[in-house]
Amino acid sequence: MSIKCAFIFPGQGSQATGMGKDFFENSTIAKEMFAQAKERTGIDFETLLFSENEELGKTEFTQPAILLVSAIATKLFVEKTGITPVLTLGHSLGEFSALVASGALDAIDAVELVNLRGKLMADACSKQEVGMLVCLGLDDATVEGICQSQRESGKSVWAVNYNSDGQIVIAGIKKDLEMLVEVLKEAKAKRAMLLNMSVASHCPLLNSATAPLAIKLQEVIKDDFIAPVISNVTAKPYNSKSEALELLPKQLVMPVLYKQSIKNSDAEVDCYIEFGHGKVLTGLNKSSATKPTFNVFDMASLEATIQALKEL
Image (cartoon, rainbow, N blue to C red; front, side, top):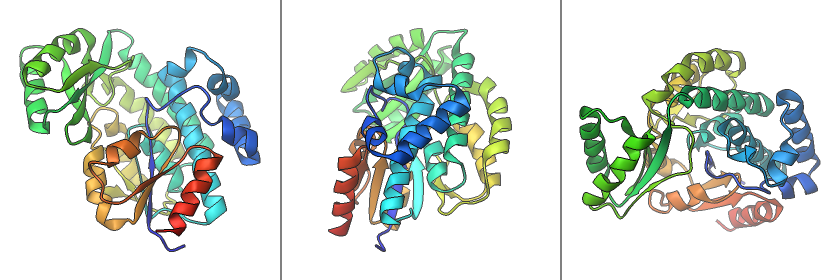
């Protein structure tokens, strides 16, 4: 198949109990990767993912769990089809899954890396009550202007995720976000709602996490890119270890330019394939992409995507 596919990967918030179970029950590869990830991190991923528990909602466990399932989905698809991506991209945490798909990061190294990333993020936010909220129905400039005005008055709020036109996530100190809800509604936002998040991603509140993450990145990133990765920071491709080492620490404290990344990539691909639980990015792509988005999150969707690609 000579189809040009972009492999795309969800971030935190896409997790759910039971994700990856169908892969685990029906694939030797999945079982092996679960075992390797457990051996490396000490995390019992079967219990974490397949039983009700509070741990899955904690960022140091959420991140490796999501990445593991995404990496398994990708490996099964590539082994079955021989299709490799022409580019990869992910939303926040998903950029690390994208690095795995691009060959620049071993899957089990990546599980360990994002487990550390989650711990660093939690530690950076542990001394203050922080959060994130989603704003719907306002344009970028309006939200940015409101956040800027709030910061000038002493508040700590930043626009951090540009998900799609009219959907922006804002991070900051929780009490400042609570006050911001009314400000956004007064500006005619269709919705402004606090999210169930214990960290404030992609803003200066995570500055303390960047240096230790950079050290670990130096150890595990390889110069073996088979396809470029679209940076969350720049919305442009990179394909070298040196660029990854420069961009990925910045990614912790700078906005995720997801919709810009899709718009910049759209002319280069025939389709997008979202690997991992849920269809979060598929939903976002509806307003930013002109090409179809398929999903691989269990064995049935794997087969359905393969069939859909044959019909393109």
